Image 1: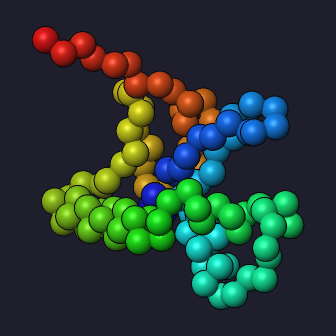
Image 2: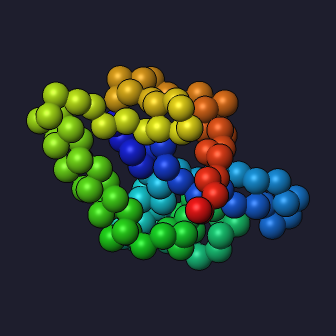
Length: 112
Protein backbone atom coordinates (compact mmCIF):
# COMPACT_ATOMS: atom_id res chain seq x y z
CA UNK A 1 0.00 0.00 0.00
CA UNK A 2 1.24 3.47 -0.80
CA UNK A 3 0.77 4.92 2.70
CA UNK A 4 1.66 8.41 1.50
CA UNK A 5 -1.53 8.48 -0.57
CA UNK A 6 -3.67 7.69 2.46
CA UNK A 7 -2.06 9.92 5.11
CA UNK A 8 -1.97 13.67 4.96
CA UNK A 9 -2.78 16.94 6.60
CA UNK A 10 -6.16 18.68 6.86
CA UNK A 11 -5.90 22.46 6.64
CA UNK A 12 -8.34 25.35 6.55
CA UNK A 13 -8.44 27.50 3.45
CA UNK A 14 -7.20 31.00 4.41
CA UNK A 15 -9.86 32.55 2.16
CA UNK A 16 -13.05 30.63 2.95
CA UNK A 17 -12.07 28.63 6.08
CA UNK A 18 -13.33 25.37 4.53
CA UNK A 19 -11.11 22.36 5.24
CA UNK A 20 -9.08 20.65 2.54
CA UNK A 21 -6.69 17.72 2.65
CA UNK A 22 -3.20 17.35 1.23
CA UNK A 23 -1.86 13.77 1.00
CA UNK A 24 1.79 13.23 1.93
CA UNK A 25 2.31 11.88 -1.61
CA UNK A 26 1.58 15.43 -2.89
CA UNK A 27 3.99 16.93 -0.35
CA UNK A 28 6.74 14.60 -1.56
CA UNK A 29 5.96 15.48 -5.19
CA UNK A 30 6.24 19.15 -4.25
CA UNK A 31 9.71 18.51 -2.79
CA UNK A 32 10.71 16.70 -5.99
CA UNK A 33 9.50 19.62 -8.12
CA UNK A 34 11.50 22.08 -6.01
CA UNK A 35 14.59 19.85 -6.17
CA UNK A 36 14.32 19.68 -9.96
CA UNK A 37 14.41 23.47 -10.11
CA UNK A 38 10.79 24.54 -10.58
CA UNK A 39 11.10 28.29 -11.37
CA UNK A 40 7.92 29.34 -9.55
CA UNK A 41 8.38 32.21 -7.11
CA UNK A 42 4.81 32.93 -5.99
CA UNK A 43 2.45 30.43 -4.37
CA UNK A 44 -0.38 31.71 -6.57
CA UNK A 45 1.54 30.61 -9.69
CA UNK A 46 1.70 26.98 -8.64
CA UNK A 47 0.17 26.11 -5.23
CA UNK A 48 1.27 22.44 -5.32
CA UNK A 49 4.93 23.44 -5.37
CA UNK A 50 4.51 25.23 -2.07
CA UNK A 51 3.13 22.13 -0.34
CA UNK A 52 6.74 21.25 0.37
CA UNK A 53 6.63 23.68 3.31
CA UNK A 54 4.12 21.45 5.12
CA UNK A 55 6.59 18.70 6.11
CA UNK A 56 10.31 18.09 5.66
CA UNK A 57 11.10 15.73 2.81
CA UNK A 58 13.17 13.53 5.13
CA UNK A 59 10.20 12.99 7.46
CA UNK A 60 7.88 11.98 4.61
CA UNK A 61 10.48 9.61 3.16
CA UNK A 62 11.16 8.14 6.63
CA UNK A 63 7.45 7.38 7.07
CA UNK A 64 7.31 5.66 3.68
CA UNK A 65 10.42 3.60 4.48
CA UNK A 66 9.09 2.63 7.92
CA UNK A 67 5.77 1.56 6.37
CA UNK A 68 7.59 -0.64 3.83
CA UNK A 69 9.61 -2.30 6.63
CA UNK A 70 6.47 -2.97 8.64
CA UNK A 71 4.71 -4.35 5.56
CA UNK A 72 7.53 -6.83 4.98
CA UNK A 73 7.46 -7.88 8.64
CA UNK A 74 3.68 -8.38 8.56
CA UNK A 75 3.94 -10.41 5.35
CA UNK A 76 6.72 -12.50 6.89
CA UNK A 77 4.32 -13.36 9.72
CA UNK A 78 1.62 -14.29 7.19
CA UNK A 79 -0.32 -11.07 7.78
CA UNK A 80 -1.05 -7.83 6.07
CA UNK A 81 -0.37 -4.32 7.31
CA UNK A 82 -3.58 -2.29 7.13
CA UNK A 83 -4.83 1.22 7.82
CA UNK A 84 -7.40 1.04 10.61
CA UNK A 85 -9.98 3.65 11.51
CA UNK A 86 -12.13 2.68 14.43
CA UNK A 87 -13.38 -0.83 13.71
CA UNK A 88 -12.71 -0.58 9.99
CA UNK A 89 -9.51 -1.72 8.37
CA UNK A 90 -8.50 -1.15 4.79
CA UNK A 91 -6.54 -4.04 3.23
CA UNK A 92 -3.62 -3.47 0.90
CA UNK A 93 -5.60 -4.57 -2.15
CA UNK A 94 -8.31 -1.93 -1.61
CA UNK A 95 -8.53 0.38 -4.61
CA UNK A 96 -9.12 3.46 -2.46
CA UNK A 97 -10.27 4.38 0.99
CA UNK A 98 -13.87 5.61 0.78
CA UNK A 99 -14.39 9.18 1.98
CA UNK A 100 -16.82 7.98 4.64
CA UNK A 101 -14.09 5.79 6.15
CA UNK A 102 -11.40 8.45 5.88
CA UNK A 103 -13.56 10.86 7.83
CA UNK A 104 -14.50 8.39 10.54
CA UNK A 105 -13.30 9.76 13.85
CA UNK A 106 -11.83 7.31 16.30
CA UNK A 107 -13.49 7.81 19.67
CA UNK A 108 -11.17 9.07 22.39
CA UNK A 109 -10.76 6.87 25.43
CA UNK A 110 -10.66 8.27 28.91
CA UNK A 111 -7.53 7.75 30.93
CA UNK A 112 -8.23 5.90 34.16
